[in-house]
Structure formats: C-alpha cells, structure tokens
Length: 311
Image 1 (cartoon, rainbow, N blue to C red):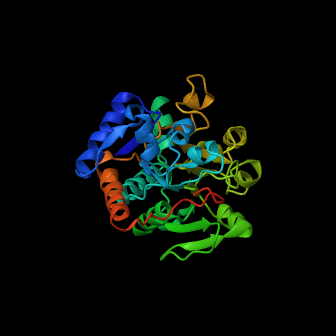
Image 2 (image 1 turned 135 degrees about the horizontal axis):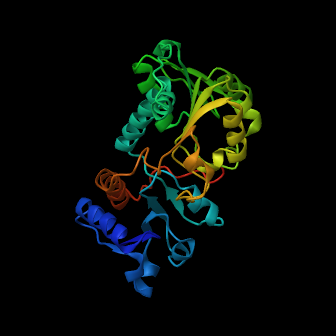
C-alpha cells in the first residue's frame, strides 16, 4: 500500500490517485487520511504533492518519497533533517511544455507585443523597427534539464542564446557562463532574461537591485522559476525607471497573487497564474510507476534531492 500525501483538496487528490492507480495496477494507492495506524508503520514509500510535514512524520519507516511535482523546495524547507530520501519528478513532457512556454513568451517580448497592446488601447498606429532573432540576445538563468531544453529551443528558432549555471556546463549552440563572475557577464548581455533557477538559499533574492541593474537598459524579464528569486521592490523600481521594459511573471512570493497587488494593474507586467509548465497526471504517473517498479524489483531508489543544494 502506497499513501498519497498532499495538502490538495479531496477532488484534486482523487484525480492523482486515479492516474497513479491506472499506471500501477499491482499497487494500492490510497489517501494518507485512510491509513490505519498499523499501515502507517508499514509504509516505506509515499507519493507526495505538497505534503504536510506532520503527515510525513507519522510514517516513521519511510525510506523515500516521490514527488509528482518538479519543485520540492517547500518540502525541504519545512522538514528538519528528514530521515528519508526525496525524489522529485523528472518528466520529459513537462520539460517540453516549459520550453514551449519559454519560446512563446520570448517571442511575445521579442516582437514588442506589450507595446502594441498599449498602442491599441490608445488608438495609436505606429510601427516599431523589427529586431532580427539572431540579433536578440537571450539569457537563460539555470541550465538544468528545463533550462537546457528551453535554451536549445530558442537556438533552434534563431536567437542568440547564453546560459548561466552554478557549475560549468556545455550546451550545444549556447554560450555558457558559470559562477559569480559569469552571472554578471550573462546579465550584461541579456536583452531578454529568462529565469529557470531552482529556489535555494543562494538564489533567493538573486534578482535584486544590483543584478537587475546589470541588464541592458530596456531589457525584458521572464520568471518561470520561483517568486522569491526576484526582489519585488527592486523589480518595480527597475520597471519605473525603464531599465526593465516589461516583466512576464508566472510565479510569485504569495500564490494566488493577492488581488490588491500592484502587479495586476501594472502596464509593464504580464501576470500568469503559474501555468508555464503544469504537471500532467498521466505522464507524471507513468514516470512514478516506472520508478516504483524498479524499487520493488531491486530496492533501488531514484536519484534523490541534495538537501544541501536544495534540488
């Protein structure tokens, strides 16, 4: 028996449990709330989606948990020295979905859609000079699986692409930077900056006043990572000064974004409701099922999150 541990409502949990059960006909997947005390003692594996740490602590013999989400930073932050491994979702379909969103919103900024939207509201007919894709410099923060695939998709569409990671990496067709010095170099040559970094103690507030000031004047910004990576006050100031011309934000410090937040009505901000790369229950469940089957066969646990790095 495998518990599904989540703070989602019952309807959402039932969708996941149905998909997981269909992918694992030899397993019994049940809501955590339905476990007896004896069953909790016997669980060595749990499938999770934003689980309550208190619930996980009631499973004292856990060896590992498998998240159906890519992001697990909240779980890591809420658990103090967990005794079990945390495995996050690595889904090629999700990676493709993210790269699609990256391309779509890069084109949105590249072709000056925010300007033309404002011109329509003001009944202004004015054509702006078009910049060729090869002359538009795109910077990708984060060269993990999501970042690499997104960067390659931008390269395939003719953009000049650079990428930054904590450690040195090589990505075909992408100028790669790393480390603190490399971050400044990337920022200084990014006409459009795309953030795909994980949220860690090192990346929290990374895009603050200092680093935003390194962007070329009038740069565009896309955040598809996590809200706390951006200093909201610093971004609002950069927007006010025109140093950042437009920001596409899909993630925020608080979600849902409060109705009175300035971003909702800011003419140079596009607000998205965390939709850049939604997890699909069917594709995610197949990946979880394959990992669970391997564990049943030879007790092998998939690569776990490095708690020190946070991903």
